[in-house]
Length: 314
Image 1 (cartoon, rainbow, N blue to C red):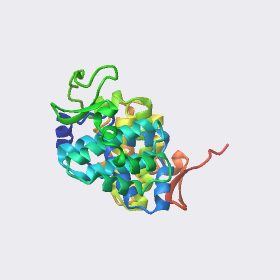
Image 2: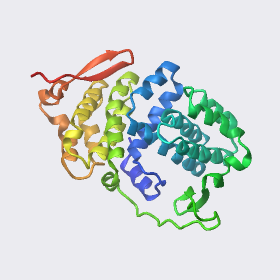
Image 3: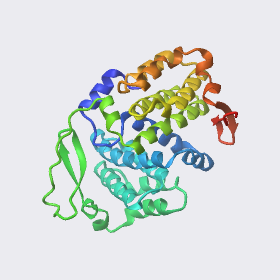
């Protein structure tokens, strides 16, 4: 979990992305897990992601192209490519190809062998359009993989290197200025997330609760709570209670100090029911925080440990 100072530093110099720190951390965990998994496990990971959650990997890939150049980090290029494999061109494949263009350009700027990096990531993909495009992109003619072919340009803004979309109707030499956004707190980010982004964070929280037990990773519990604080903070508490229960149960199974972990994550949520409930959830009577109170139970499936919703008795 990021410290308060790390969060302050992050929000003083934010990358231009349309999702939260918590979601980025959660996606990174899934990307790393996916990159080391066998074929069957990779299929299981993707199958657990909702459509809004998978779509979040597209924005993540584009941000990794930017952050890789700022941090001179080839690893972030690799993570961005794996994110595109997970996303699988599930929306408009042209958006995935545009992210490939940014990652290719950034890889070149870092002195990497783009073809090797793209082939390696493509080997993790199922047969389909993203595998084909990822393998084929480095082999395109130079003019067909340049930024201008995708109406993109690079620039140095106040926060550092970034890519910029050019208006389709204007020549590349006349990019429009984009006003600098004011520094935002986690609470402000929470309030401007759209419904798909909120649902992606909430859905990811429940997924991470189960993954935390499978991988024995307390960090996934922390990331799930962070995402829930930001994604569920602007919604009714009813959207988040069952995932709070899953995360609490996972924290206890992993021997974590649930009271401290939940209180720290609650600081990211905007004022409201979720912020209050997240801080006090570990203090509930045992029967009121038990899985049964939320019609949930543990189960072991072919995928491993998971949580299951139990039908309400009539």
